[in-house]
Length: 50
Image 1 (spheres, rainbow, N blue to C red):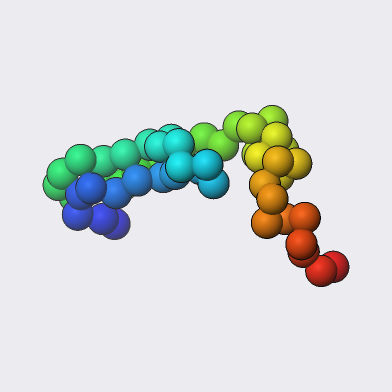
Image 2 (cartoon, rainbow, N blue to C red):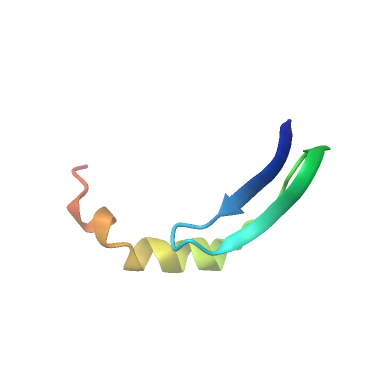
């Protein structure tokens, strides 16, 4: 539970969901195509050691 001013933000900084003030829960559905697109374009992932 949060007490306001909470965000769900994607890796590029786009706000997916927010809650301004008060108690509550913030939730969002993830777009799997968007996640796949970000993973192919995120420079930091090029340096991963597997």
